[in-house]
Image: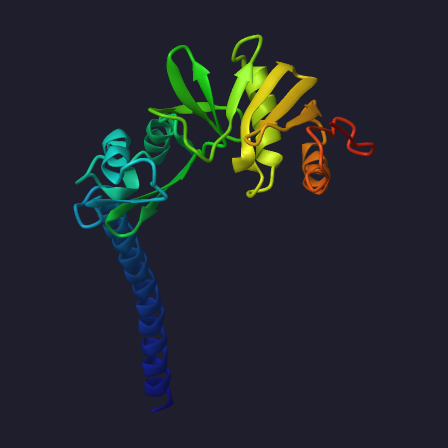
Length: 239
């Protein structure tokens, strides 16, 4: 009787060990199967394909224009869509300052653009161009916008002179910039603002433009025809 119990116990332990081995093998096969299925679903199947494009941040640009330039390959598995290539194509648009392209699982490619904003205009040849805060020329205007100052350069519209002019205009408060008729750049150290009411501001260089703008706001309350903020710690006025 004792031997029968021992034999049965031995048999149970042997089957338990075998079942444990089989269970591990089955779990391993199941995991491999799931991984294979997931790989197929993500990289090769039509289950997670790119079906639509969403564009946000487009104001001056049209959504259709961004979509056309982006050329997102629809019906391709979303995981295999080259986001870097799409970003490069959209970034090639002069008006686009920044772009972010991400996958919107399960079926969309999401494009977010940050457009350049004109702070001034400059005449280049026969064309009136918009100038952003970094001094980048990026768009055309048919007529001068009423709220944007013009940039005039005596040595031509060089990248350096445009950057200096843009830095000055960008430092002006929102209520002061529209009062500027034009910005004259003789050299990078000789910048002047001509206000729409006929008054003149001697600015100097673009250095310390934020401080100069603060000083100018106070000075404009004084009766004068010329305001000199080239040395913001020692501003002067004259008739």
